[in-house]
Image (tube, rainbow over all chains, first blue to last red; front, side, top):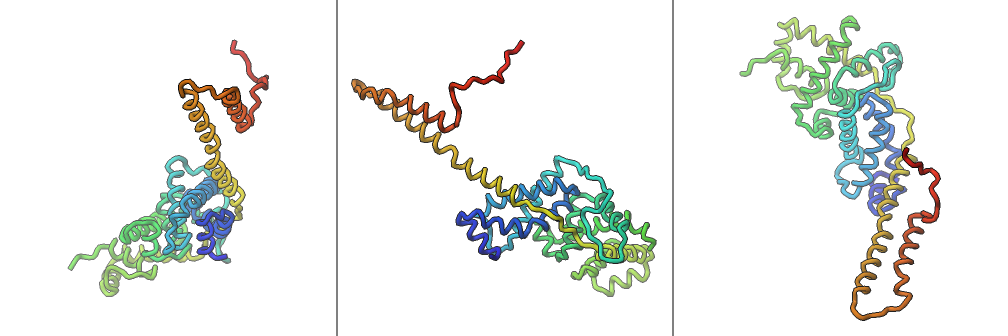
Amino acid sequence: MDDAEAIERCQQGEQECFRHLVERYQKRAVAHATAILFNRDDADDAVQEAFIDAFKAIGTFDTARTFYQWFYVLLRNRCFKLTAKRRPTQSLDESMLLTSQSGISGETTLGLEKALHSLTAEEREIVCLKYFDGLSYDELATHLQIPRGTVMSRLFNARRRLQRKLVPEQEV
Amino acid sequence: MKEITCEDVLMSQMAVADGEQPQFSMQQLSTHIAACGNCQHELKQSEALDQLLAGHTLSEPRVDLWPAVENRIAKRTSAAFHWRPFALIGLLLVVYKLLEMLPARDLGLAFKLVPLVIVVLLFVLIRENPFRINTELVLER
């Protein structure tokens, strides 16, 4: 079953077809929510709530968009509601956000995660979508519903802060 | 022509590294960079950061949210239909009251038992025994 068929059948009242969408996108959604919230338990909660929101609103789904693009708006709304209420509490003793390629030490990865932790949730989100998901500036503008100029300045500021945290230790 | 600042150059160089169109021409950028030690230093740091980021991906955790989501959807669906029997009982009571208010009409014993039937129906619906004694109740001292 593809997404379009699953969505159409959900819209006709076949709840079981929603399972296809949850199982297909839950890992990616939890990874994105963890990037914003920096807390795995909160990320699971936010993703669960976002899927419930998606189920309620599936009748209004715009078929011109992909499911995940539409769902991501619901997910980030849930995440930012949570960030307003809670502070990240998870300790950073081990990597929970990133996987490194071979040749990169665990210490380096942990250092990068700590630097990401020091950013604001919005900066962390844009860095992750740009450098780990590979979205273009135009795609970021659509995903985050902000102008392209804001994409560039937010990314630039986030990178600067990461550089200040990381690069002196990397001996440029 | 607008004067180009270090921030303009660094933001444009970031765009170039990200495969996007810069705001300024490559010639303008390289002229500024060649004469600016600060930009040269910042660009070295920026390259190191790019290399570090390129060596990582987002972890996709093991997760199975479907049972919890399914449970929430089922609860929501059942809750949506739960009010209907109560609405029906309410409607029956209103109709009964209106009929009772009709002047000089004796509708018989069966009609007088209708409220009792409705009350029994209500207790069946909410699955409660009205004769059960709640042993957990404690008198306040």
